[in-house]
Image: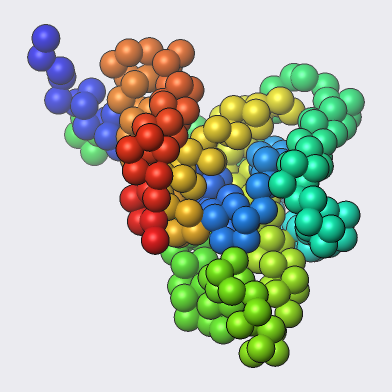
Length: 291
């Protein structure tokens, strides 16, 4: 059966745009899990929290949700610092971060979900923006701005983080903290402080990604569960701690899900991330850009 050219190209465009969003969703996990060895299973909870904060401000004052998320990202940064401090004092400092620390983040995930359900209920929420319902058409190609705008901001954020980590002393310290903490201490750097700030950065990216999510689709409190497998699949597929790998893996996953939804049905799309994760672990555990 011949595949219509317009359908094929639109599937590619949708996959790339979706991949940009997946990169923003996953870059925080690449920092916390890939670089800091902190298995923050609650990462999607902060994405959903960012979505609801964007929703509140947008519904009350009409501000653009993405601008709201960027403006409020320092609050997520401070929240991340506080969360890591609790995690460090209660688990990492005692050498109990492997299992009990994982349970801690599971607790954060479900507590956040329950609180959001109690406050907002289980109804889907959405936001209003000047571009949410606008689609640019170039011949047979469609470019929905509700995907284009998050894509552009997502790629800018991911590239900015990569440049920051590779061109600043703090960034190089983050890259080194999981490899040789003793060497960092000999250079007068406190590894715990570096991990605290880097973890806070990962939470800040989650809050911004939450605004992208609610621009792209309506959200409800439990929708974050759908992204647990996805963010770790992108992190592992791209290579642990590789930001460029995260971006490439996000595009691969976005294209795979777009083709699956277009030609086999959307019900199969959620299985793609887990399938790619299993294949990566089986045949290339180091990922695309693994070291």
